[in-house]
Image 1 (cartoon, protein in one colour):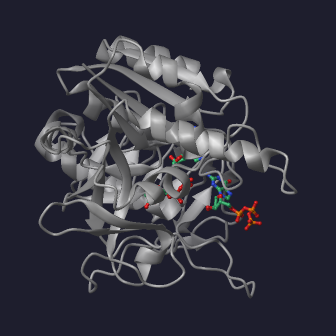
Image 2 (image 1 turned 180 degrees about the vertical axis):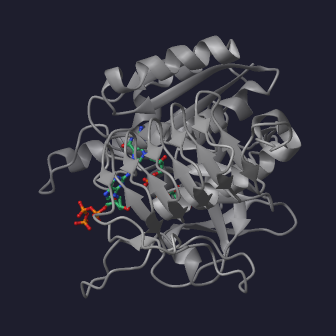
Length: 405
Ligand code: GDD
Ligand code: GTP
């Protein structure tokens, strides 16, 4: 029997959306971590999914109920009393995780998006008999690798010989994807990290009781011990840290639907449908005018209204938003319940990875540089906003109005 843990963190300083917890932000029409849950539910032997985080229960419980009903699998939310770090929650809830004696358990960072190769990971983990941890790794560019956990492996045995979390200078272009398989014996190692920290508890630095960083305090010391291995994958994988990366992830999840869930993609066949440039997801409760043109890479949420002549490309439109006639939305996220008035133009700057650099990942740049300069990024129209032209279009009827959001 297998289990899976999804680390969902808690309310962030930089939310993706002001009203939706980041793990529930819809990407390709589904809450971000529903993609993880769906991948787990596809494993025959996987019996239980535990979400660990420090969001208030009220923000997560409805989602958990919906997921249990949809996938007929046990799903629980375990709330940390305070942020316990990436391993503190695992240790705190170790009895729940060990309950039922699973053969192994997956741990997945909730803020990554991927075509999750869970079966391959587990089969690989089984083959390395003494293994306590299998880490999914992928190639990054030399420069970008510094923002991730960097890994050196033995090319023959796949053993992890060196692990450095976000190094200050180059270590390796192989990076930790934040997707792991653990054997239950790992709790002994995490326990040692926990005990070692008791010393620090009374030292000068204020240390939160039970706070353990998986990467620095568990994985790094395990490197070279013969108990940690890495499986390199070439599947699509990305972090979701910024709003720009949500648009990027949206495109890839929509692309995956073509193979795995073609029924979720909207096709403009039949009468009364709008024109679609693939790939596009439209919630069944949305109302899109037949003269609108959507795509590529567009997700339209529940209750959204898209008016006549609207053009939307590379964007996510959240629930109950209304895009009025002849408006244009490019590289943007339109917040829940927002209204984009007629003839408006909402345009962001694409932030995709550099296509000329092999293995480049999306840059998760802050909104402003250290010198105060704005990093051009996608445009976000926050929740319940209104963006309406002050004047009506000129006689040509073709002029869009541009607004700073
Ligand atoms: N439950 C819980 N409690 N979850 C947490 C906490 C916590 O205190 N802190 C972070 N998380 C969750 C986040 O929500 C996220 O899903 C995951 O743990 C990792 O988050 P970060 O701590 O922000 O790490 P990171 O994303 O910068 O780097 C990690 O992921 C990279 C891959 O995306 C590291 O594991 C890197 O080595 C790795 O390359
Ligand atoms: P600092 O730059 O650290 O001072 O953060 P801040 O609190 O000023 O927020 P900032 O404007 O930098 O935005 C933080 C993140 O939230 C960025 O990734 C923005 O893209 C995103 N963001 C800002 N406003 C909104 C909003 O109204 N709705 C949504 N969905 N996201 C937003």
